[in-house]
Amino acid sequence: MHTATKAAAAAALLLFCTACAAASTSDAAKHHSDGARQLQYQAGDPAAMLAEYDGSSDVLSYTSALNEWQIKCTADRLTDAGYVDAAYRDEQQHGGPDTSRLEVMRHLTASVPASQAPTNCASIAAAYVVLVEK
Image 1 (cartoon, rainbow, N blue to C red):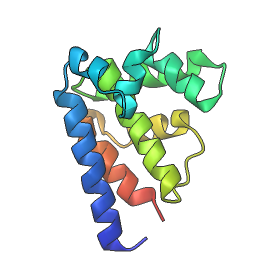
Image 2 (image 1 turned 45 degrees about the horizontal axis):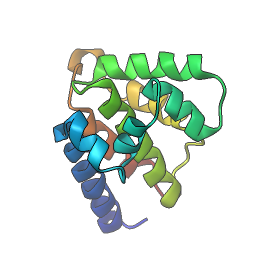
Image 3 (image 1 turned 180 degrees about the horizontal axis):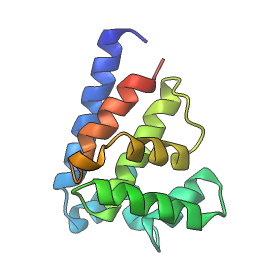
């Protein structure tokens, strides 16, 4: 992927993630087109929804990974899960290496040094996508 294309993809993801962070739960129920907002429509914990999207029954691993990711982030659990979903979907469209949302979540978590947490994870997700896409 060309540098300009990567930059455009990162900008789009960052805009999406920023919109998710700014959206209230009521806004999420109104607009179901984004990954984080789609999670709002589902019953249960966002970690269970990420597992379901991946076709996995190992909800415990997703819950644990989302707990670790959420510790690194300043947003709420639903928004943090949305960052993971958006990053995964973007990767799948642009040749990224991750094979599941669980893998994305673990890589994103590892990308945030303890000394920098909690942080704005929208920017972390956007930067990660730029780095891993082909």
